Length: 417
Image (cartoon, rainbow, N blue to C red; front, side):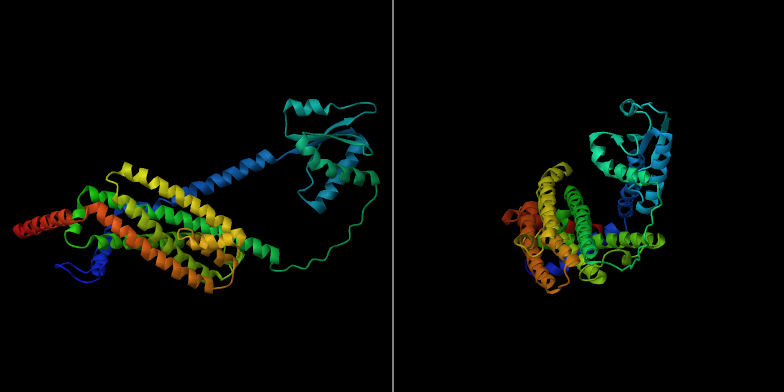
């Protein structure tokens, strides 16, 4: 790629700026871009509603009572002991429901009740306080055996128990909770970065195929170098992506503030929230340029939307594997596996963003950004070369066609003027 003006054409970087400005303004002020901005909000709203409904359904499905059928005195003692322990232990004590007060010598068929499938009973306690019997599916026996034994022991004592008060000393956080929160921040950051890159990088494919179909690419190639078309489109889509992220981020921040939430409620990343967001933006740019250059090169080999989908599928699946590689590296900080994820260009932004969440050091990010910048330059150069060969079949014949097409276009404009 050259930066000088040859044969009356614009230089590479000036031409790339012209293409980038043209694509940026054309997409930004189009109605389709407004719907594109609104597009991700609908899945988020549906996911939030589905999560709320799913949690409610799961809560209702998991709710289960323990029935109790004992002689009257034992039943009352068990219910009172259960209520007293529930005040101290909380939800770990299951709710008891009195089924039947048995007369001396009377029995209760717990197996028949559970086998009938009626009600919400997950287990039934029978027998006496001295010899309680628990009838339940095998999975619940180990779950509630100790609880029933504790309640029965409390009921058998028939005496008030003095529970000593516990003095509490709250702290803001602990080492374990801080590490757990940082790992969760790392995973969430990686997932968000992956979704944004995959969602936004695919735009370059549809834009390229559309312009190849209506011959705009050939018109551009007649006036400016093809490398400039590649670079201009890539950076225009990056700028459009940043606009979209700014809009979505503003909406998300507004919703958090409206809900009374703030970043102080979440674990502080190793480098701090301001630096974490700054590194996230830079790593998004690096990841987008790496994957976008691949998508543009792939799009140059396709002539229809169906071909684009067929050619882009291996790239997409490979990027999913790369994301899994970076995700595994989160739990192996300082090991060779993490260094492999950092060295591999496509996984490096994800691995380094996770490292920013769990580690306070900044100098590794400087080295990683230099390495990623070199990889971006190599990917753009290789992608532009393939783009030039595949789109216009560069060579003497291709150049002649471009000059002939350019003469026809210039002549048309002269006649029209």
